[in-house]
Every structure is written in structure tokens, then in C-alpha cells.
Image (cartoon, rainbow, N blue to C red; front, side, top):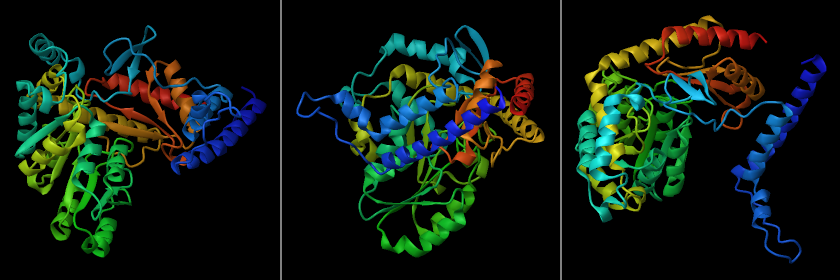
Length: 442
């Protein structure tokens, strides 16, 4: 591309970004335009959807891709098992766009247990567990997770996102306060918003700022929840859990830790941030995790005291009114958990691969933000255009990685987000960094 073409691309990107900012702001404020009925004519629902700012945002993203001659990196079809490698349109790629951290999703032992559960129980639990009853494998998984966390009990949900939304929404209400990390997952934010409680965020991983907020405001509220994550999936960093535990003792709040990305990744056995930080199991009141990453299935769970679990089993809408976890998924996740605990060398290999990637990226001069090298490493590109171009160029070179750009992150923080698995080979990581260096020089 010549200089004039580059200038045209940059001008188009700037104009589209300004439009996207406007539409995103309107969508965030809940702005809606009424569907047009055509001056008294027939109701046109399609026009009504097209008038919504959220659709306009989608349309702008599409037009940005067309204007910048960038192929969308999203919704690619993977034609087989996806792990360290994957097949897309008949071509094999080195894959950094999945959470199969310990390779359990393609483990033959895990698959065998899931298949056996299908033969015994069928493919679905068919209704909520209160209506359709329990399956032994569902309770076996919950007891195993409770044992891992040293808690009284555990309850499994069919969606990780819904686990946070329904748990927070069921437990807290008006008169309560929910404080969450500024980079907390959308599910935590949605749960706080649905609860009716007062919601505040504190600066990312800043326990001192949280301490100041609590010192000023704790006495004004009946119940207070502080929600953090064990490993932040956008930046790959870890909170100082011991500091948050100390604040919990002083300010008397409920502490919730989302272990979606830290289970199987942190700790010598992969037991999560509790093992990594060396805190007691009862220093955290609500342990949340998912089965869709390390545990090779789908769904989420809450582990904690018996009163907590009893409340959720009887009153959390996401459990009470949703189908029970499919027996095959429960069996697969239970087998993955057992495999993880029986083979800590997988966790050690994952840690080595993550550190290799982080160190190589930094030595090559890339900005990796605050990543600690535990399975998640961002490469900060600095602009949405650059992140999208790098992702497309890497894909042409046989490397699959997803870009993250505005408005998901600030424009200056647009990035490529690499998820490292224990099944990645050292040579694949070296090749990836070498290729990224070539792409970035273009």
C-alpha cells in the first residue's frame, strides 16, 4: 500500500472511531430510537432494530473493517478439537484463542467419562434440578469442587456468566453495597446492577483505594460485597489476595473471588489463587469458578458455606429456573478436575510456557502490560487499527489470535490477547514471537 492509501486508511479509521464513540455513548446511556412505522403504514420491526444504537455500533464495526480492508477475526469456524493448534478452513493454525489451559478438552480420559455419562443418563437433564431431580454425577462434581476449596458445599450452574449474575442478584439488594474491581468481568457488573444494591468500582487491584472507600462508606450499608478475580483475563495479572483478606477482617464484608481463569492455572496443583496466595479456605466467602476453561465443560459453580449454597439452590433464578447441568458435562468436568489433581506436571508445564511467552515478548520489545505470565499475555498494540492488522497478518502466517479493541478497551490499550496452554510447544512460542516481530515491523 502506498503513502496515499495509508493516509486514507488512517483518516477513515479516525472518522469511524469518532462515530463509534458517539454510538457507544448513546448505547451506554440506554438511548433508543422508536421503530419507524412508515407514516401510519405497517409496523416495520426490522427498521426498529436497525434504529437501535447497539445495532448501529455493530454496523459501524462492519463498515470499519470494509473501509480498512480488514477481514473480521471473529466467529471463525474451527473444524475439530481446538487446543494449542486448530483447523480453520482446512488449514492448521497455532492457536491462542481458547481457554483449554491444561489440554483437558481433548483428553481421552475426560472424553471417555463424558461418553459413558451419555450412555447412562442421556444428553440432557431435561429440566431444572428442583423439577427433574438430581443425577448422581451432578452431586459428585459439586462435592469434588467443595473438597477442592475446603468448603461445606457447592452448587453448579449451566452458565458461567449467569453464575455471577444470579448469585450477586439473589444475595444483595437495596441497602447493600457492592464494590468490584474496575476491570471485573461483565458478569460481575451485570449481577451488581441487577441486584438493586449501590454499585461502586475501585481502581484495578488497588486494595489501598478500596480500604479508603470502605473506611468512608462501610457504616452506611447493611451488607457489603467485594468482588475480585483470581486471574484477570484481559491483562493476565493477579491480585494480592492476602491484602483483600485483611481488609475483609477489618471492614466485615463478604469477599467473592471469581476463579474462572485462575483454577488450573495458579498454585502448584492448579488449585487456584487460594493455593497461590496461601490463604485459608474460609478467608473468602464466595468462591466462584467455571467449568468451561480448565475443567473442559460448560457452566459455573459457587463453593462456600452451607447457608450460602442453600440460599442459591432454593432462590437463585439462574439455578431454580434453568435446566440442570447436563450429565455428560458434569462427568467430563469431574474427570478433568481429577486429572488436574493427579498430574500437577501439567500445571508446571503451563507455567513454564506462560513465562516463556512473556519473557520472549518483553525481550522483543513488546508491551505486555501488567501480565504475570500465567496463561494470559496481552500484546498492547496501541490502536485498534494496528491490533486488527496484526491479527489478520498473523492469521495469514498460520497463527490464530484475537484482537481486543475499542470500545472493549481504551483505544490506546488495544491489543492482541494470547491464551497459553500447557500443550503449546516451546518451538511454537518462539515461532509466534518471531512472526509477530516481522508483522510489527511492516
